[in-house]
Image 1 (tube, helix red, strand yellow):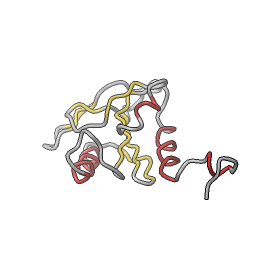
Image 2 (image 1 turned 90 degrees about the horizontal axis):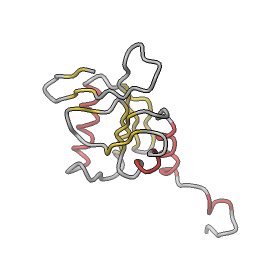
Image 3 (image 1 turned 45 degrees about the horizontal axis):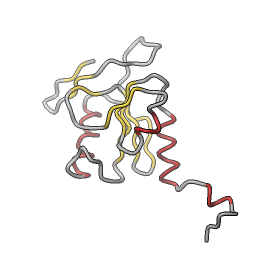
Image 4 (image 1 turned 45 degrees about the vertical axis):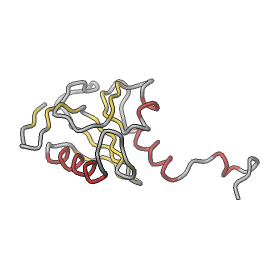
Length: 127
């Protein structure tokens, strides 16, 4: 049993630690689509929009496939969106306890990428 006086009371669950690990990968100043519960943790250092399936995508995406997200009708839809991002050239950099970090790099850029990327199911994608 966890008690107020034991150190385990103050440690996070494995899922909370996975979320923190995902958020830590996002560079300061970056534009990121974030799963609903992670947005507030990033707003002080990044430009954050909610993770959703739209044609113009942020260069960084933190997806949560471990639980329902308000902008998707089902977890199947969430997984389909992750696959769409991969098909559009996003590289998966992190996968832990349902949290995924995907990134669409802009070649030759040393500064945080703020350019939306077009990504659609018909295969049309560009930076």
